[in-house]
Image 1: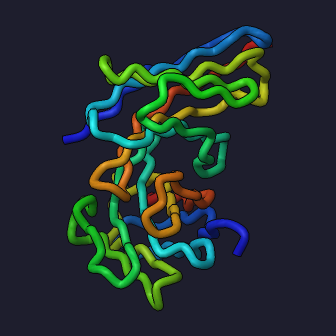
Image 2: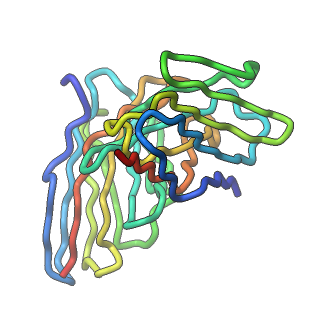
Length: 110
Length: 114
């Protein structure tokens, strides 16, 4: 079956860059997604990248896609305390359904 | 509505009781999904509704779990004879038909079975 993997924890200092990594299994995925979950809240779509792109930048967020290695990363520049959350990588499964990774808990230290 | 609404936000129930969790999707979204998020774990797919098609129930963990979607809008997830291992956050999401742009999630219902 489909399996999306992520490291579970990441701690960074405020102002540093954070890099959250993900590996996925379905090379035919057309889009890949990053979701953010703040404490006590549902998941919020953060950004996505189309599979024919290598990189997508959106303000402090940079998504890098290595299709050969099936590796996706999310870089957050100038990480702030408000970025503390759980970040989920997701890929489509049978079109409309999605498979989510276990989530990476990002802790931003002052 | 403006977002996906779930109720109740928290539910504590005794082992063996039945519970119903409700989801109001975004108006016009034809696809609706239920996921379960257990403590320290990722999201587990439960069930998916798309328009008038038969739902994809492949993720339901046992026959104690069922869901329906009335009128193509509101959905209810029912757990019968709850067990302690059912304790989790149950998340509902909706999306427009054939969307490649991800889901919109509700805030979830935190279920605690004591």
